[in-house]
Image (cartoon, rainbow, N blue to C red; front, side):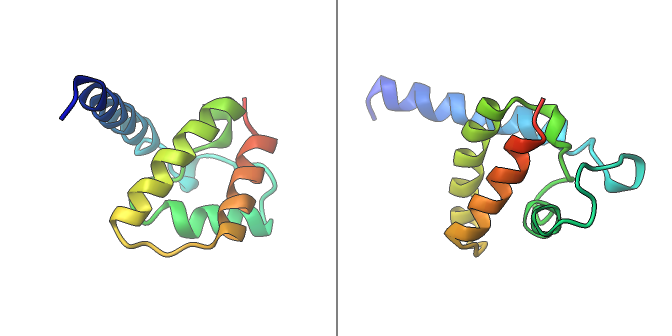
Amino acid sequence: MPLSCLVRLLTQILGFTWFLGIASCASVSHQSMPEEGSTELGLLKKKCTICHGLPHPKRHTASEWDNLLIMMTERMNEKNISYTSVEMTQIKSYLQRNAR
């Protein structure tokens, strides 16, 4: 395996681990979420809490969410968690609208 691929993989693993550590502290019970009752938030709760706690959108910037969603879709594919491109577009839109 070329060194550049190894470095990329290690960076993704470390980033993913950091994200899960932060996100696992989040919980719906002690935080209010933007756009409560919206379809997008419902979808975020349904899909994103399969593996970790619900992250608050203000936890990251829109740009950070873009990168995290790329990693999350890869992870969802690895775990055979189904989602459609429309669902991911809705989740991304919600996170970016309400990002820090």
